[in-house]
Length: 110
Image 1 (cartoon, one colour):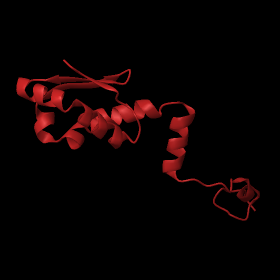
Image 2: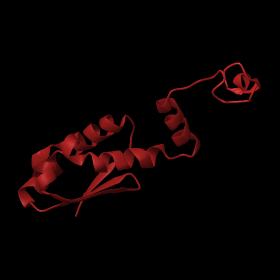
Image 3: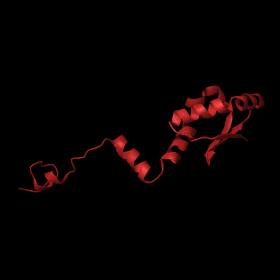
Image 4: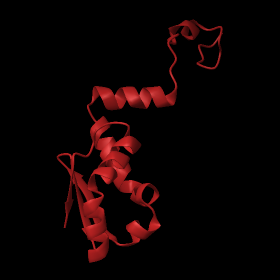
């Protein structure tokens, strides 16, 4: 009989690991091993900025990036900048809650 990966009775059938994991678990393990989880979460926050903060804030945001646990925001509205400045801690808490870990420790307005 021909040795085929599609033939469960062949000699290769027993070489497959019995420890199966879901794709989600495999990706989480990969991010953890290569220490990429923080960068992944930072990218998630930037990519989903509109969903997290809402359309009115996202429409007035010109730049969003994260570096060294600092969120840098460029805004084209002075009143919105003042409003967010007063609610800075609430915004930090919301972003960290979304990422499910402490990603942001400070917000810098550009």
